[in-house]
Image 1 (cartoon, rainbow, N blue to C red):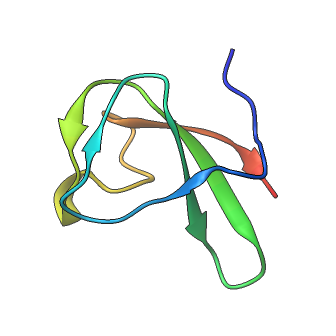
Image 2: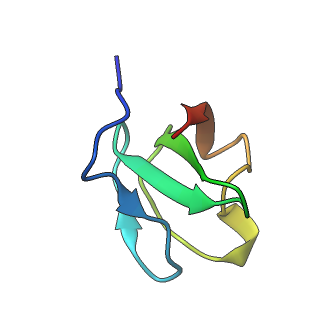
Length: 60
């Protein structure tokens, strides 16, 4: 199971994400953390919270 850690990578476009890797997205109050569901190169159309590519883990 994926966990939320201090070294969670920030989501950015044009990055190769692999299944089961975590990413963090600033939400204005803190960070939302997602786990990648399938390998892909990130873009605006597959950014979190796109449920085809990401599953929400929690806030940090």
